[in-house]
Image 1 (tube, rainbow, N blue to C red):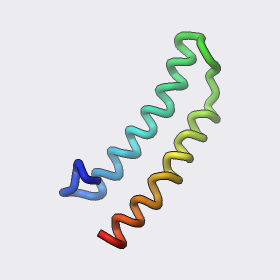
Image 2 (image 1 turned 90 degrees about the vertical axis):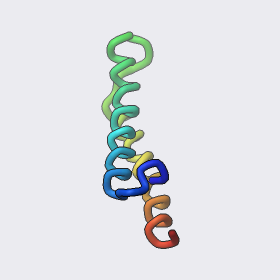
Image 3 (image 1 turned 135 degrees about the vertical axis):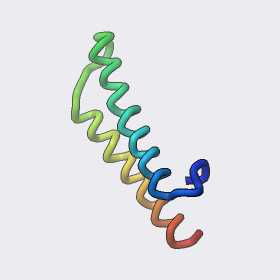
Length: 65
């Protein structure tokens, strides 16, 4: 939200899209290379963990700053 400070909704959307791309990207690399294991639940757990981590920061930013 500090990099795109002129629009909070765009900043949150960009962060969420990056979260999706990174979490699912690791799973795609595992699928393509055959190294590790490909599980959709791993990607969903990463996305859920990212959302849990983003929520307090968003709440703090909108209430305090």
